[in-house]
Image 1 (tube, rainbow, N blue to C red):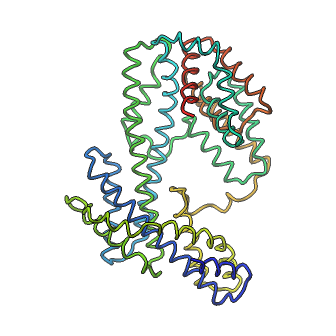
Image 2 (image 1 turned 90 degrees about the vertical axis):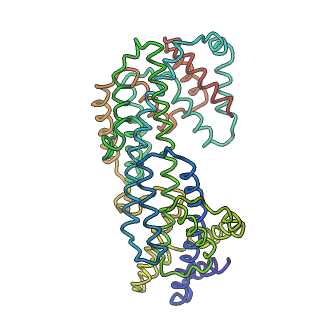
Image 3 (image 1 turned 45 degrees about the horizontal axis):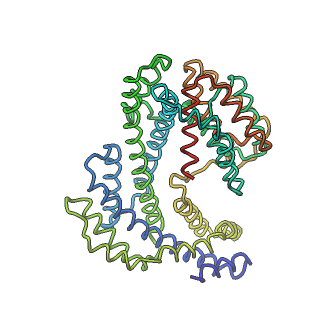
Length: 458
């Protein structure tokens, strides 16, 4: 559709604004609403079909799923659209996801430990031979085989996160300080996000609901923290490793389910926010949604004839996306021009469209109401305080951790830090130093084998 692109270009030129500003809103809103209906019809069908095929979905997810069905049913029956109900459900799932992600992050610390302990109970002579003859050259070739610097940096972080960690705590803190100096002059939100991400990967952060959402996860983590990994036997190791994998797999499944459900909520929220906008192009999508909802609320199977309706939607999502991408760039300008002209209704309409644009990004859990302070440029004092606060948190947390946990946490954090190598030789020297400093032959063999498996996947 060229119409939206044309109107956007006219707004850029500030031409005929009394006509083009409302026209721009109408056309962009219609595109977003049609896209939301289209995606909702496809993803909802997939989710309901998946739920019906499974009899062991988490009760946490099922509760959210049933709440969604109830809200959707109210909207389809032309009852009043309760925006707060949609937003509250989205907020609740987002809050639960923060906890689930933290459980996964914390369990990954012990996965790191298990991966190294495991080789005490294995014959790793073949790995030793590979390490002595081929490993370093293969690893450097893997890192540098791509011409894209972003990919190279990603591979370096991946490798650093697996190498044996033998840094002192003070040296670790030095690396943190060096990393934060690179963020001087960045937005406050960028610095806060990095600090939060590091706290999460380091098991420092415990979001609201952590102790109560899935008690068995908390219990397992407490059990893993109490283990003496110097003396652990093969039988105890096998049992804990299997239990951890089972719980991790369930958490990942729950996380995937929540992501898909939140995508549906984002689309439903979009539709509700644009309730007064024409959606004549969405009739087929509505038919699919209504039929799928009927199945979700009953014990009936989904009508397979619905699959024929999806054929009628082929190519439509791509077309709408192209239209949105070619015209949404003018949204900020349109809102600013509406403010200049004092067009109160249009200002509100464009603010709604801005929220819709966030709901329709690839960031499923995007924050819809952000603090303007996050966009302010930080000064050196803010960066230094953020770094020192983080270091203080590490100092406190490390006191209660054993050396296996500390090393795993440092490795996880290192993999997140901005690259700290200036030249190729520095990378190779760090790899060699890490392996030479590691006196635990079982851990060294584990690291070599893990990195070999990563290289083999390329």
